[in-house]
Image (cartoon, rainbow, N blue to C red; front, side, top):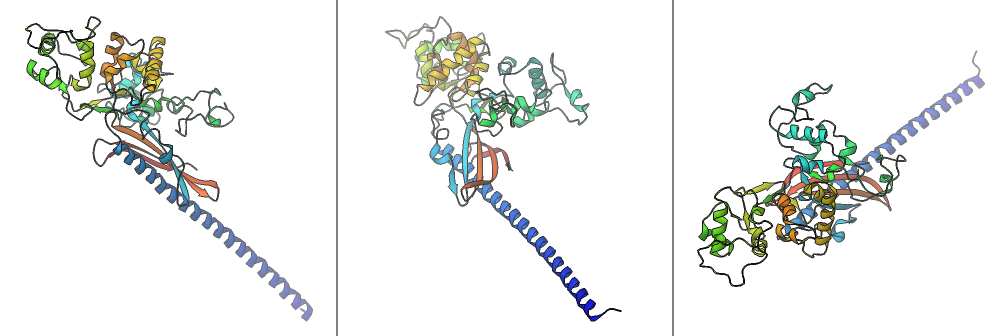
Length: 434
């Protein structure tokens, strides 16, 4: 029989259990509420970072559009601009921008085998695989592979057999690893951070030295091209066409020199503007030049320098893959020149020479002023270089500001072609990093 006293005890126990249950419910609801608040905070931060990145991209595009087109150098505002590009504060976040000239790299779609071999850590079997990927046949190179190899992989896919459409497509090529492609600069800031020189202590895995390995992504592109116009935007003169009078008028040269150009192309069309000169070319025009002489006179080096930016050997409106000698790294320049010790020294000389110029080299012929640059070396690279650029890669990182310390971050990359108005977006990627 349950006594009155026992009944009160049972009620007390029931009440206590109800209190415990309510406390558990409150704790669960509180925890869920805090999680919801945390999620909403992160979502809000990511949204702010997303638009901060968009603001950074648009800022860079605006500066690129305002940039003068005579030549493009690392001294230009799009490259050297701490005021508009570093830690720019917005509402609750800030952004940092880095602009990279795509013409500062070798174009993987048109680079020669020797030029690709000139890159650091590149091997013959990888170069052959790259060439087999971009060519249109199914005939493998000496150490390369064609479609059959990729279609028999555990996770098979088709070979492109055409031009690379994005540079990250290179990771699909046999033996191209992420380590070779990305190097140590995994945050793409172009600086040697602590975690990129501490060996195996933290990611990324690096060699522990004090030199940043930026990987092939820093030296290869698939977007670069040169518009076939001079510094003023005028269409260049094709030296494989036009009679003496047209060459004389268009280029401002004397009739005997124009006659010499026409005569020289009769046997073979010019393959490069550098075919106009050789080791025997006069350094300067004659002291008493004649404009009415019936004799042809060879083009002198001084006149060649004056007209180099005005002439071409093709009517194509765009010439793919030309490397901007004002912005290319010494590694790219060395690869362009052949990749040996002599090429590396000449590449360093080019960098030293351009660093002494406020506005950079205005014409490809200006590279002939570089120490140890002879006619043979110039003829080797003349068809592959330019001094102007149209396509740029813009990298922007937006970071949320949580009362003095960093919150969520968002990374955005856009490859833009500024030759059209508005500029054309060739590639776009956006994603959270934390």
